[in-house]
Length: 77
Image (cartoon, rainbow, N blue to C red; front, side, top):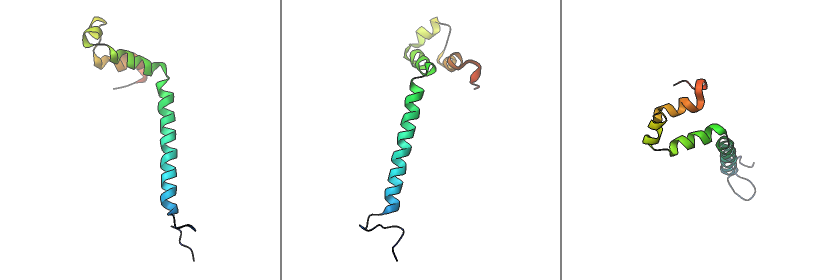
């Protein structure tokens, strides 16, 4: 009787399945990150993070205010 863990060539089927699932999961995660990076909110966060503390102060903001400014009432901290 053949073992569940090996195929005809002796390769560990469960190990290969795990690698394939990890690869698929990483691909899905990378796709979600790519989608998020194209949103206007993500670009706004990048913009504010690129400013110095002095530039933010001139705008009447601190780094702690950035999330509230970008997400407004959608984000509760």
